[in-house]
Image 1 (spheres, rainbow, N blue to C red):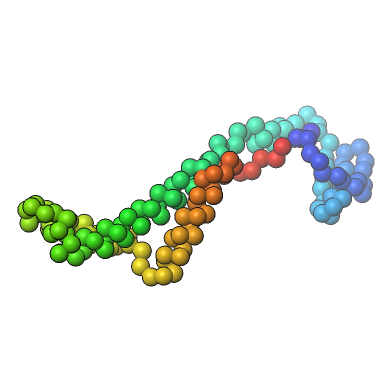
Image 2 (cartoon, rainbow, N blue to C red; image 1 turned 180 degrees about the horizontal axis):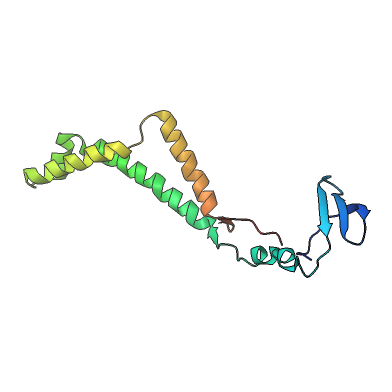
Length: 151
């Protein structure tokens, strides 16, 4: 009774109702009881767990692309913060536009500053993450969320 397995057991005791076993490699102890009419339901309860289908794999390509977009968004926010936080640069960019456009772009520049990359360590981490995410996006593997299933 039970699913097929590649586990090897040493039988240390056996009679007509019980068999005691020990894992050949791990030393784990097992107790096997004879299946009778009274305990048939308990003996087959494992099958409902094995029949559950595994959740679909999350392709690593999507994970890599999402990471790339996140890093590129931070780089864009850094550039926007740098250029739009200066009123003179904003006026030059909005040549001929009204003061309200300049004010809005100034607010956007300040908001972008929250997400901007600042400091050498942050730049190095962001560039390394960009490189790693590029390699991940080229991968053909996947991440299975949830329980693992053995073959």
